[in-house]
Image (cartoon, rainbow over all chains, first blue to last red; front, side, top):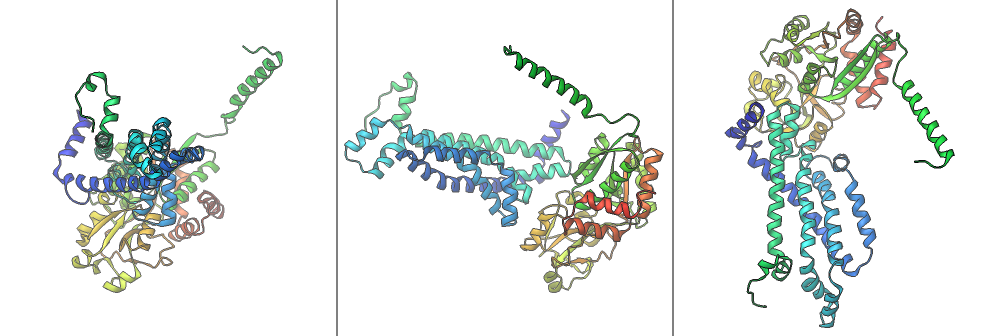
Amino acid sequence: MGFLGSVWRWFSDPAHWSGADGIPQRLVEHVQLSAESVAIGALIALPIGIVLGHYGRFGNLAINISNVGRALPSFGILVIAFQVFGLGDFPIVFSLTALAIPPMLTNSYVALREVDPDVKDAARGMGYRELTQVLRVELPLAVPLVMAGVRTSAVQVVATATLAALISGGGFGRYIIDGLAQQDFPKLFAGALLVALLAMATELSLAGLERVLVPRGIRLLRAPVMARATTFKAA
Amino acid sequence: MIRNITSRWLVAILAAFLVVATACGGSTTPGTSKGTLTVGGFNFPESSILANIYGQALAHDGYTINYKLLLGPRPIIAAAIKAGSIDMYPGYAASELEYYNNSAGEATSDPAATTAALNTHLQPLGLVALTPAAAVDANAFAVPQATATKYSLTKLSDITPAIASQLVFGAGPECPTYKFCLPGLASVYGLHFKAVKTLDTDGPLTRAAFKNGSIQIGLVFTTDADLKGLGLVVLQDDKHMTAADNVVPVVRQAAASTEVTTVLNSIDGKLTTADLISMVDQVANQHLDAAAVATTWLQQHNYSS
């Protein structure tokens, strides 16, 4: 029971649930850093991926840059960003955004490429103009894959935001880094556990978001036969 | 399998070469090494210099030395030496004492007495502290010149509780539990700061935080040579919160043979605070290599002889 007992005691200590180093405060910091990075990453990656995917141009370039981006070590980028920008949240968000972009860029490009060309043809035949075609026909069909990219990004960013503590940032990484320096292993373990839980919660909530965003028709198409046998009115 | 006879010969030659190479590779000529010792160091430049001085002196004497430098703060180093993954590290008498006695408050400004007290705590752990050097490097607390002028600060007791509640304090993650840091400031000077920012132990994060104004008081070391250039003023420890932090090697008893002890003690006999300040300046500000700086010092002092 020993070690797990100490971890339990760490969690049941009310002092760890309040104040500047308390779990709620660290949770807010962690979520804030992750959300900012994923949001900025999405603002950069999604439009580029969608446009390139729609026109089918420069796909290889986009995917290759993405792969190189994935290979860059976030820790390395963080240290370089610290040298350039100094202390604060900016270098952290900078390196996490660099981590968030590749999965979203690749997925949104592929998602748009995967749209059935017959559907695009039909849309064009019906008189949809370019932007409307993208927004009303292609994007809804592409949502599952795009959301998969966003989910991958978000979970990676939440897990990697622990690095923030290395340059005096906040978040659950603080428990891990401080726990190691103070040789306080229950704290270190608690920090790791909290990050894992948050990553899972992120995955589940974004899966929920995806269910909301995917058009009902597509969802039913992909559902097993029994679920499909419901009555539904064609809009 | 390999069909071509030329390829088979090539593979055979390659295999033979690898066997010979690995056989020759790792071994030293029997009889010339007196043993292998691992020297550890804290995560700041001065410790790397001291570890290199001890290590190179022992290597000069015939030992094979491995280095594990920049390991981390004291809790990590203590765990490493207790587990035997390092054989020795350059400690600081008063800080070691207050760590191994769980901040019982036994350290004084007398290095000999402090080291003796330290040894009573090290003994049951299978460790021993040797003779302390005259060289001292203690914790100190610095403020930017502007802050010192604003609140008229020259010594730590000038900081009233009212002033303290407006200052943000910065130090390494081990500071809240380290006697000669936050707990000492609270118990000896009654200081409770507006906020505590976790940075590093007198490293680049601390300097960056001073520079961008996110902290107004931080932990530095008395041997830091770059403080003036950064516009920082060290506040005098007038109530003597920090004690005799003389450099002293902490060694595993199993590794502390008579010969090793003699070499290390003779180094300590020659090491002065002025030496530390100039060596740290060379490494931290002039960006020289810690090992090279150590070699220079040893050559100037004729190694351990």
